[in-house]
Image (cartoon, rainbow, N blue to C red; front, side):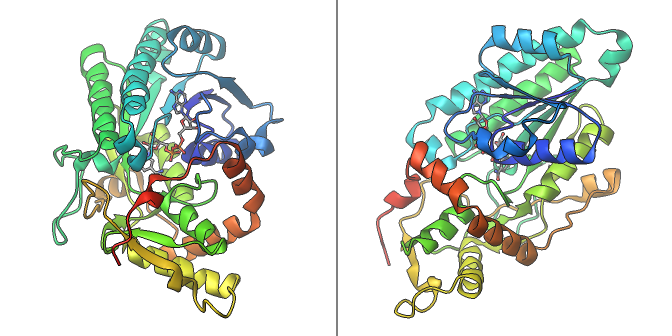
Length: 355
Ligand code: NAD
């Protein structure tokens, strides 16, 4: 029984579907269903007897205690977080609450449950903390990619809160011996991503013939990781990763934001051509004032996970992006439901046009 937190969010949904489809494990999904959590994404597994859902906040220590006692997990995979950088700039307090205080409460609940186990079960228990490459800050164009010993230098309230949570997790290992592993992944993309994030946001804006707001000159570089590759890496780490270690997970796909948006436009031009008077969707691209503290470049060195665990990303960006665009084109009602219910426009829309 694996306890997944944040399993109704983008990566969590894909992780749970992967575990239930490809392994014999059961899952209990603990999620507060905040704005980015969507239980409709897990409709297909609701009736699976290996799947359990508990609507709870990771800051609620009483609920956590009950969950551990009832489900007796052999592992925790901690994904619950406030995850959108722009929102953290507008209102950091929820990031401090969920990402830092929530992680602390979860560590405490995990620790007291873990201490109650037999020696044999204690040895097998794992706490996998899913963090981000953003804790490392950013890189100059020609600087070496982040590895597991790169110093932390977070830039945004989001990445600072994730960095703080990493330190708590490390301390609970060092001080109490809790068997933890920390992962840092690069930007994920793929099916079920909340519509405010770059790739779905651009697809949906283009289809609605709205402008495609690109921060600054669009030259920021991200290393894009397909979510299917990411969840596979997380499961490998759970099964074979070394306790107390950090593993970086990247997609080997460094791309500027402008390249990403241009490729989305090309794919849409082919798959869903727009009206003749606009020509290409690329004509909707609109450069807006840059995000404060915007990181220039992230890049991930995956040597450790590749050599130790034999994991390597399988998806090329071009093929992964095509699959993603096709998924959104065939799941417009999934997006519409979110946007009708509780979608607040992403702060990216508020940028002032500079070009
Ligand atoms: P998401 O925003 O799509 O999902 C977060 C989930 O956590 C939601 O289901 C939400 O309801 C839940 N949640 C939020 N606060 C909660 C609370 N207090 N208690 C219980 N549940 C709560 O995020 P995601 O993109 O799926 O990211 C998952 C994890 O991966 C996060 O920890 C994030 O920092 C990390 N990460 C994501 C990316 C990415 O590109 N998406 C990159 C690096 C790291």
